[in-house]
Image (cartoon, rainbow, N blue to C red; front, side, top):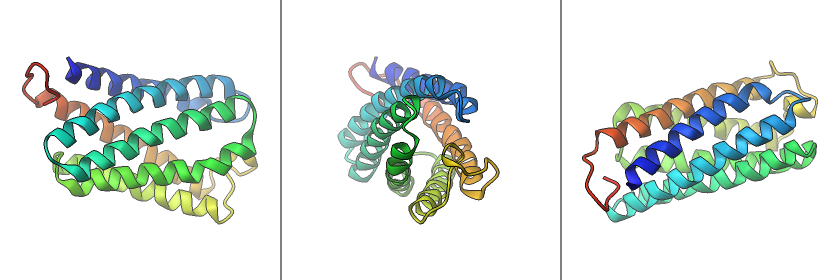
Length: 187
């Protein structure tokens, strides 16, 4: 049952994120906020269950990584709410921290060896992109909703990293689907 919740949560997270991504430009903050809150809450639930699964399996590094991804989900909920209310500067204030949390989580999961190699590699690439973008924003790079151009390199890096994150989540879904379904267990 819990495995189905993980798969469902990850699928909902991917779908909501894809639906919200085109709405990021100025003028559609309410829709973007709605889709990203759905994305973040679904990701929070799935990552929390995956953390429990990794902890039960004795993989503490992956468990901490999944907890960090779950915290990223909570941070994204706050960030999306700030954007939806038009508090753009406040959003940029927390965005680097949210991206850094995701980078930490994906890195810990990637080095743990818990998932197939291609999923870990794509996840580490997404982590690197988010970490670089977070550093750039911390040192003054502008984002589209604060006056930067959508073609500026931090925005493009986040877009590419988001695509890699979606591929990573799809890999998590595939990994869960290939696990035997035992009652009372996530694996």
